[in-house]
Image 1 (cartoon, rainbow, N blue to C red):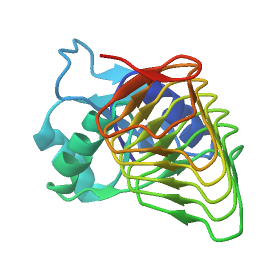
Image 2: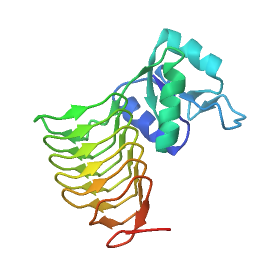
Image 3: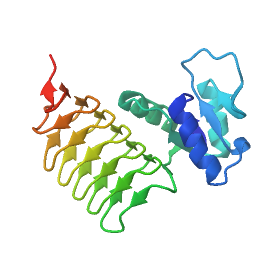
Amino acid sequence: MLLAGAGGHAMELADILLAKGYLPADLAFFDDVTNYQVKELNGIRLITSLDDAEAWLQTNSSFALATGSPKVRKLLAQKLSAVGGKLDSVIAPSSITSRQNVKLGAGLNLMNFCMISANVTIGTGTLVNAYSSIHHDVIIGDFTEIAPGCRVLGGAEVGDNCFIGSGAIILPNIKVNSGAIVGAGAVVTKDVVSGAMVAGVPALRKK
């Protein structure tokens, strides 16, 4: 599998895949932006050109998004799909997903010890990070990042391309619209308009 990224989150995804039985030779990191002087990271091949990524994908078309930024995740999904890649999910064995009416899009990262409850929908390319919980009847859009330790409570909705900071709590039936940013540790008690940044307890809009 090609991991689209080569930073800390990519290392965490590699750990999950290695624990599932992948060998280092089965994996490669892809980063065509950073100027690396090495050809591997922690014993795993590093690919730094789109041409080399395309060649890898001809043998194994599967790739996973391995960075946190919603914008970068979407860009990488488009870039690698255009050269024959197939967007795949990485789901940690320690994550818990309800068996009741859960709809998961392609290309998700469900990290260690996260929880997905009943009647939840999560869109394409979204990251639910470690120890986060997504409670009943929640809807999360595409290419959104739910950082570690978040709580998205029953009936809440999070749009596309959002960032929900570590430890944030979104209260029941609250809507965080597309492109919004919620600061770490915030408690969101009111709907958040598209593109807004909120932080604090209770969360207030930042100018």
